[in-house]
Image 1 (cartoon, rainbow, N blue to C red):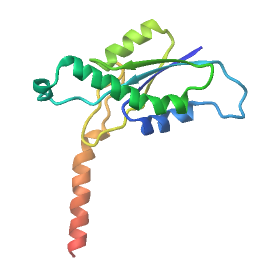
Image 2 (cartoon, rainbow, N blue to C red):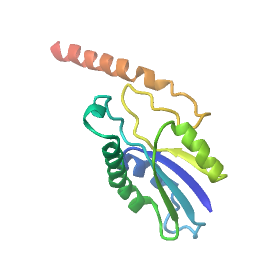
Image 3 (cartoon, rainbow, N blue to C red):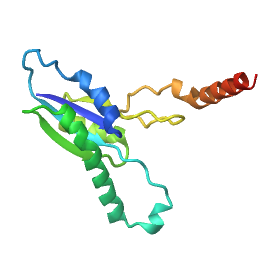
Length: 153
């Protein structure tokens, strides 16, 4: 059985990233896949802790994960496949290591939506650091400045 660990934070983006991995409908039947879908909820601000209890934050994270995971499950998981849903806590690289120990031979897929001006934390310890993300904001600002200059002339 093929095991895939997929990290995601947006259902549409994750579907676009994961659908090409599926076999075409006219291809011969492949072995079943064990999908381990790890939802990565957005971080809450530090001020939230003043007003919301830990249990309420965990309930919100679980509800958010259920809401975001359902479209991915419907799009990706085929009949006969196994499914494990998880909500990320702490370091994603450490979670990947523990899941790889639990499921040897599992492939790790990062289907999280890139954020403008932010480097996403690594999913594995040996994941290369992105170099182009550092220039995302200055490049966008320079492009906007050039567009404003052209518009005023």
